[in-house]
Image 1 (cartoon, rainbow, N blue to C red):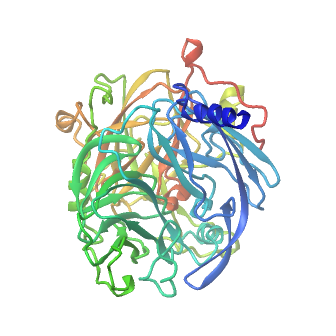
Image 2 (cartoon, one colour):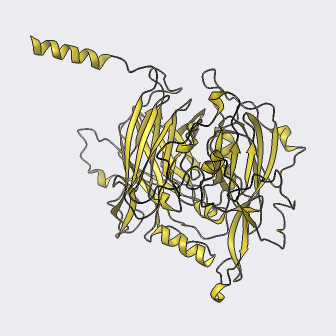
Image 3 (cartoon, helix red, strand yellow):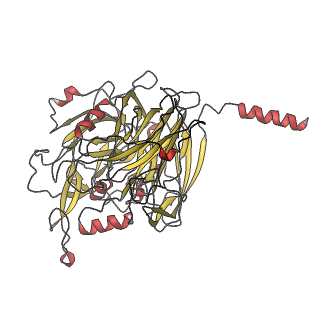
Length: 572
C-alpha cells in the first residue's frame, strides 16, 4: 500500500505544469583540448566539454542561465552568447577586452544572464582571436510553456550547424597572416555538425545524416558558424519554408535554397514526401563569395535519408542519390531576392516595433584598406603591395583592441588612455564610395566608441566601399536586435533612398549582410546600458580592424542602469 501511494504521489508531481515564470538552469562548460580526425588529418583542438562542435544549450524564454566556463587550455578564452540581448547584464556578453578580460588558464567565470523577450535559434562561440573555429555550439531558446509556435508544430527539431575545418592550427594561421600582412590561409573543408561529408577525400564515414519519416514536418535550426564564408544551402528535390531568422519569427515563405551569413541563424520547416521515395538526397552548402581574395571553393554535403518501409528490399546504400543545384558562387541577384523576402511576422503577438522617429542618424563606411608595412628587420609584406598590409575599418578607423576591458573601464570611471568617446557620425573624408577608389587606401587606427544616451532611437546606414574591391560584410551588433529598413546598391542617397524604407514589417535581426557594392540601413532603440561591440562576422575582417563599439549610458530609473559587475569577473 505504501509503495502504491508513493508511486501515485510521484506520478502526480510529474503531471504538474512547469512554472509560468522562468527557472534557473545551470551549465558547466569545460574548455579543454580534444583530439579530432577529419580528412584523414588528426589534430588537437580547443573544444567545449571534449565535443566538436560543443554541446547544445537549451532554455526557455524567461529563464535565467548560470553557465560556468572553466578554462583548461593554454589559450585565454571568453564565450559570447550570440544574439542574447543581455539586458543590463553586459558583463555576460563575452567579447574579450570589450565587456570582460579573458578567462586565463586554470580560471573560471560564471556567465549569468536572463533570456528576456526572446525565443528561437541562437548560438554561442569563443570571442577571442580565431578560437571560435572549434569552440561553438547551438543555444536553443524555446517559447514559454503553453505558447505555441506561429507555425505547425514539427515532428522533430534538428540543429544543423555549418562550420569550417582547418587541417592547420587556426591560431597559427592568423598569427602568420598578422605578421606578414597578407591574407590568411583558407579552410580545407566546410562541415555540417562537425562533419565534412562524402564530397571530400577520406570523409565518407564523417557524414551528417538526417533520417526522416515520410509525411512529417521537421524544424531545421540552421546556424552558420563558419569563420569567413557566407553559404548557400539546399536539399535536393525538396523545398523548405523559412519561418525564423536570428531568433525572430518571419512571414513564412518557400524556397529551394537559403543564404546564410556567418553569425546568422535560420529556422526552416522541411515537409518530407508523403510516401517513401526510394531515394536519398544530398543536403549541400557552398560559399557565396563577393570579395577578390582567395576562399575555400568546396562543397559540404550531408544526406537526407528516408526511413525504409519494412518490406523494402533495396539496401539504402544502393538507392539513387540526388544532388541539388546551388546558385553560382557570386550570385548576388539570388542573394538580393532572398534578402528581400525576409519580413518580420508583425502579428499581434509578435509585433515589429520599428522606431518611427529617429533621434540620431549615422552614416558609416565598411570595407578594406591598408596599413604601412612594419619595416623592422627589413620585412617585406604580403599585402596588396610589398610595402602594405591588409587592414579593414569602419569609417576608415581600424579598431585597436585595448588591453583593459572597455566596460570595466567605463563602469569604474577610469577610461582615460583606454578609449576615445568620439567615433565620427559620418566619414571624415567623403568620397565616391563604390566608384573608382581613392589613391590613398591607408586607414587610421584607434579605440573609438560612439556614445548614446539611454533610449536614443538610432538610424545607421552602413555603406560598403570599393577600396580593394567591393565585398559583402555581415555586420553583427551585440546587445540589440535591429530592423533592416532598407538596402540597395551603389552609394546611399540620403534624399531618395529613405523614401523607400520599410517601416512596417522589416526583418528584425542581429546580423545583417551589407550588400557588396551597396548599403544597408538599420534602426534600433538604445535601451540597453553598457558597451556593445559591432563588427564584421567574417573573422578575417574583424582581425584586420572592421569593428567598433557603442557606449549606451545609464537611464534615470533603477531598471535602466547597468547591473554591478560580478565578483568573479576576470582581471586583465
